[in-house]
Image (cartoon, rainbow, N blue to C red; front, side):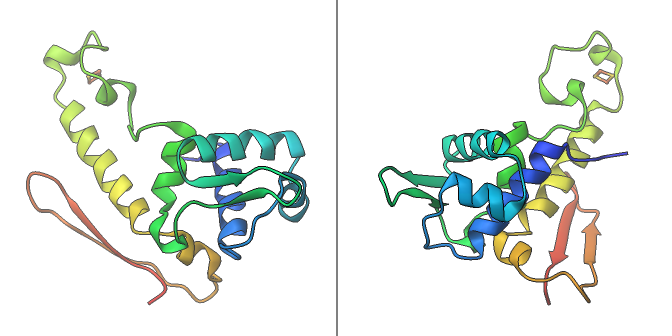
Length: 158
Ligand code: FES
Protein backbone atom coordinates (compact mmCIF):
# COMPACT_ATOMS: atom_id res chain seq x y z
CA UNK A 1 0.00 0.00 0.00
CA UNK A 2 1.24 3.47 -0.85
CA UNK A 3 1.28 5.69 2.22
CA UNK A 4 2.90 8.98 3.16
CA UNK A 5 5.12 8.97 6.20
CA UNK A 6 3.98 11.00 9.19
CA UNK A 7 6.53 13.77 8.72
CA UNK A 8 5.33 14.42 5.17
CA UNK A 9 1.71 14.40 6.26
CA UNK A 10 2.58 16.87 9.04
CA UNK A 11 4.26 19.08 6.41
CA UNK A 12 0.96 19.30 4.53
CA UNK A 13 -0.76 20.19 7.83
CA UNK A 14 1.73 23.02 8.50
CA UNK A 15 1.59 24.34 4.94
CA UNK A 16 -2.22 24.24 4.85
CA UNK A 17 -2.33 26.10 8.17
CA UNK A 18 -0.03 28.82 6.79
CA UNK A 19 -2.06 28.96 3.55
CA UNK A 20 -5.17 29.89 5.52
CA UNK A 21 -3.55 33.31 6.20
CA UNK A 22 -0.84 33.49 3.55
CA UNK A 23 0.34 37.05 4.22
CA UNK A 24 0.66 36.74 8.00
CA UNK A 25 3.98 35.85 9.60
CA UNK A 26 3.52 32.99 12.02
CA UNK A 27 6.08 31.94 14.63
CA UNK A 28 7.08 28.31 15.08
CA UNK A 29 5.53 28.02 18.60
CA UNK A 30 2.18 29.34 17.33
CA UNK A 31 2.26 26.95 14.36
CA UNK A 32 3.01 24.03 16.69
CA UNK A 33 0.16 25.00 19.00
CA UNK A 34 -2.40 25.54 16.24
CA UNK A 35 -1.39 22.36 14.40
CA UNK A 36 -1.18 20.40 17.68
CA UNK A 37 2.26 19.10 16.72
CA UNK A 38 5.42 18.81 18.80
CA UNK A 39 7.56 22.00 18.57
CA UNK A 40 10.76 20.12 17.56
CA UNK A 41 8.87 18.43 14.71
CA UNK A 42 7.49 21.76 13.53
CA UNK A 43 10.95 23.38 13.75
CA UNK A 44 12.40 20.58 11.61
CA UNK A 45 9.61 20.87 9.03
CA UNK A 46 9.87 24.65 8.81
CA UNK A 47 13.60 24.37 8.10
CA UNK A 48 13.05 21.76 5.38
CA UNK A 49 10.20 23.69 3.75
CA UNK A 50 12.15 26.97 3.85
CA UNK A 51 15.23 25.24 2.39
CA UNK A 52 13.05 23.98 -0.47
CA UNK A 53 11.91 27.55 -1.17
CA UNK A 54 8.29 26.98 -0.15
CA UNK A 55 8.44 29.22 2.95
CA UNK A 56 10.14 32.48 3.71
CA UNK A 57 11.35 33.29 7.18
CA UNK A 58 11.65 36.72 8.68
CA UNK A 59 13.88 37.15 11.70
CA UNK A 60 13.23 39.45 14.64
CA UNK A 61 10.73 39.98 17.42
CA UNK A 62 7.80 40.09 14.98
CA UNK A 63 9.32 37.57 12.62
CA UNK A 64 8.07 34.16 11.63
CA UNK A 65 7.21 32.09 8.60
CA UNK A 66 4.86 32.54 5.67
CA UNK A 67 4.39 31.00 2.25
CA UNK A 68 7.00 32.03 -0.31
CA UNK A 69 4.35 31.93 -3.08
CA UNK A 70 0.58 32.24 -3.33
CA UNK A 71 -1.32 29.14 -2.10
CA UNK A 72 -2.45 28.29 -5.63
CA UNK A 73 1.20 28.27 -6.74
CA UNK A 74 2.27 25.58 -4.26
CA UNK A 75 1.15 22.02 -4.95
CA UNK A 76 0.98 19.00 -2.71
CA UNK A 77 3.69 17.53 -4.94
CA UNK A 78 5.98 20.48 -4.07
CA UNK A 79 5.55 19.68 -0.37
CA UNK A 80 6.17 15.96 -0.81
CA UNK A 81 9.33 16.57 -2.82
CA UNK A 82 10.56 19.08 -0.20
CA UNK A 83 10.34 16.44 2.53
CA UNK A 84 10.95 13.15 0.72
CA UNK A 85 12.94 14.13 -2.37
CA UNK A 86 12.14 13.36 -6.01
CA UNK A 87 9.23 11.11 -6.90
CA UNK A 88 10.06 7.49 -7.58
CA UNK A 89 7.85 4.48 -7.03
CA UNK A 90 10.78 2.05 -6.83
CA UNK A 91 14.47 2.36 -5.97
CA UNK A 92 15.31 0.96 -9.39
CA UNK A 93 13.26 3.51 -11.32
CA UNK A 94 14.94 6.47 -9.66
CA UNK A 95 18.60 6.15 -10.64
CA UNK A 96 19.91 4.08 -13.55
CA UNK A 97 22.66 1.61 -12.78
CA UNK A 98 21.54 0.92 -9.20
CA UNK A 99 19.94 -2.47 -9.77
CA UNK A 100 21.51 -5.76 -10.79
CA UNK A 101 18.31 -6.73 -12.68
CA UNK A 102 18.19 -3.54 -14.74
CA UNK A 103 19.64 -4.98 -17.96
CA UNK A 104 16.84 -7.55 -18.24
CA UNK A 105 14.07 -5.77 -16.34
CA UNK A 106 10.90 -5.20 -18.35
CA UNK A 107 9.05 -3.03 -15.85
CA UNK A 108 11.49 -0.28 -14.88
CA UNK A 109 10.20 2.07 -17.58
CA UNK A 110 6.61 1.43 -16.61
CA UNK A 111 7.29 2.24 -12.97
CA UNK A 112 8.65 5.56 -14.20
CA UNK A 113 5.34 6.09 -16.06
CA UNK A 114 3.36 5.27 -12.92
CA UNK A 115 5.46 7.65 -10.84
CA UNK A 116 4.93 10.38 -13.43
CA UNK A 117 1.15 9.82 -13.38
CA UNK A 118 1.01 10.06 -9.58
CA UNK A 119 3.22 13.15 -9.49
CA UNK A 120 1.05 14.81 -12.14
CA UNK A 121 -2.07 14.14 -10.06
CA UNK A 122 -0.42 15.59 -6.94
CA UNK A 123 0.73 18.66 -8.88
CA UNK A 124 -2.93 19.36 -9.70
CA UNK A 125 -3.80 19.79 -6.02
CA UNK A 126 -2.65 23.11 -4.56
CA UNK A 127 -2.74 24.62 -1.08
CA UNK A 128 -5.83 26.56 -2.15
CA UNK A 129 -7.54 23.18 -2.57
CA UNK A 130 -6.15 21.95 0.75
CA UNK A 131 -7.54 24.95 2.67
CA UNK A 132 -11.03 24.33 1.28
CA UNK A 133 -13.17 21.82 3.18
CA UNK A 134 -13.27 18.39 1.57
CA UNK A 135 -16.85 17.58 2.59
CA UNK A 136 -18.98 16.81 -0.43
CA UNK A 137 -15.97 16.65 -2.70
CA UNK A 138 -16.20 13.94 -5.31
CA UNK A 139 -12.98 13.02 -7.06
CA UNK A 140 -13.08 13.39 -10.81
CA UNK A 141 -9.91 11.85 -12.13
CA UNK A 142 -9.40 10.58 -15.64
CA UNK A 143 -6.26 9.01 -16.95
CA UNK A 144 -5.78 9.33 -20.68
CA UNK A 145 -3.68 6.48 -21.98
CA UNK A 146 -1.67 8.68 -24.31
CA UNK A 147 1.82 7.65 -25.37
CA UNK A 148 4.56 7.89 -24.26
CA UNK A 149 3.24 8.91 -20.83
CA UNK A 150 -0.23 8.59 -19.30
CA UNK A 151 -1.88 11.97 -18.75
CA UNK A 152 -3.81 12.55 -15.54
CA UNK A 153 -6.65 15.07 -15.58
CA UNK A 154 -7.86 15.90 -12.10
CA UNK A 155 -10.62 18.35 -11.27
CA UNK A 156 -10.54 19.75 -7.77
CA UNK A 157 -13.24 21.67 -5.93
CA UNK A 158 -15.33 21.91 -9.08
S1 FES B 1 15.32 -2.33 -12.58
FE1 FES B 1 15.47 -3.31 -10.67
S2 FES B 1 13.89 -4.81 -10.67
FE2 FES B 1 13.59 -3.61 -12.48
